[in-house]
Image 1: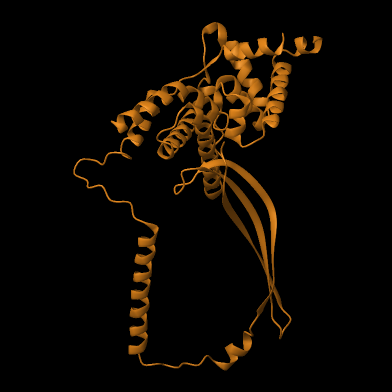
Image 2: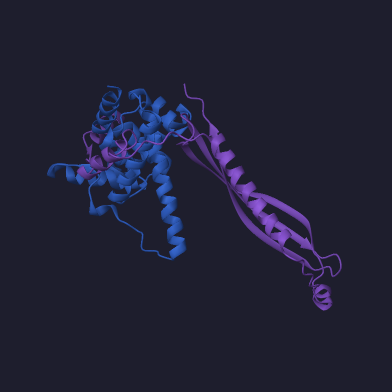
Amino acid sequence: MNESEFENQLRALTPAAPSPDLGRRIAAAMIPSRTPAAGVVAQPRRSAWADLMRGLLWASCGAAAAALILLSRTPETTPAPASVAAAVPPAAASETVSELIATADDGLVFDEDSDEPQRQMRFTYLERHVWTNPQTGAVIEFEVPREDIVLMPVAMQ
Amino acid sequence: MESSHHDAHWQTCYEQLAPKLLLFARQWLPSMADAEDAVQNGFVRFWKHQPQAGPEHYPLLYAAVRSSALDLIRSHERRTRREGDDRVNVTRSDTTVFDTTIDQREHAEAVQASLDLLPQPQREVVVLKVWGELTFAQIAQALGESINTIASRYRYALDGMRRHMKPNEYERV
């Protein structure tokens, strides 16, 4: 049996049809994206600039409120006990190493903000932070995993 | 008028490709329900971004379904780790992957068994080429690989399947 005969044997099998429910679910998912439901006013698409300005406005309101509260309070100075301050000397970050331990190609994806497909790459790092106390010489090490997902534009022909 | 065109586009696409997309998704997701979820997510996402898509864009639809299937697997893995639940091994035997007559059933089972033995990159190429009826160039576009790589994987995959399905015949050849 040559290769094309074998391919024909494989092609003789037809993939099983999905359940009727899948068609209904897809139809339901496709329709609301185009026509709003009765009695619901379609909202205009918000721009990123408007979102940014709204965020800044709320942030400045919050900052002003916090400043007012702080200024209205009488400062109460409660110095930390000398023994506690002496017992916890400051430690300083002395080293940070980021080690790439894995990469994965997730293939082509569709980003919400882009009409073109993009390649999604997944980079996994292990970040190692070292803190050293200059007075006591104590070294604190901790490791944090980090995963970066990067979308790269793909040129389609 | 435009919306009815759009409906006609995606409905025609669904009628033509739904079984093929489902078979493709089931190469990652043995459970029929999960595979249908992946097809739904990929299909809707694709048509949302490509409302005027034609058959020349269908390789990207396969890419969208693949991406959805991988997302679903990752989400299952995260949940399994979080809940410490290892009861997620779903066997494919509960439902059939191919529509078969009684005469074809044994052949279909042998084909699926030999597909299951292939490495994932080879398996997806075979499914796209044989049952998806895509060209090597379209498969390369869907998977983001070179055409030579795809052709080579396809040849290896067919050899592997023939060796598994017809061991005696393969030795004679």
